[in-house]
Image (cartoon, rainbow, N blue to C red; front, side, top):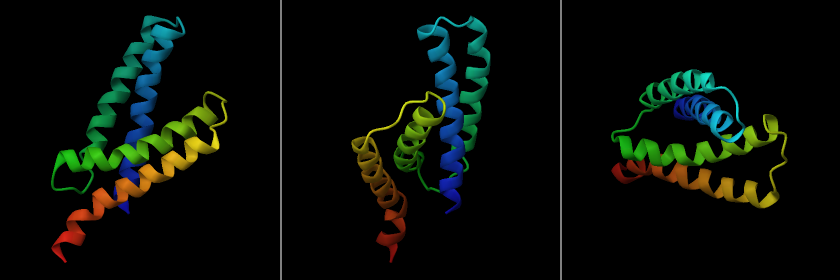
Length: 110
């Protein structure tokens, strides 16, 4: 369960970092948005290493489902755009898949 906390924190920092670049390049904000974006992306990478997984690829794959949900929450809270039902259904499928990926090694060793 602690993995999901790390995933949520990582998603927050990754989305914030990417959004800083989005603001600079797509919304014509100051180039100074790059600095907090880079710091946020560095925190993202550091946090993701805290996930309890034997292989980085498996951790990244499982993280993808959580990232999708966090992106929809960002869409709603920060960008003030309501996600569609199909967005939430797709995200739910991804979280199920992420859980299977993360728990797979435990199920295999049983």
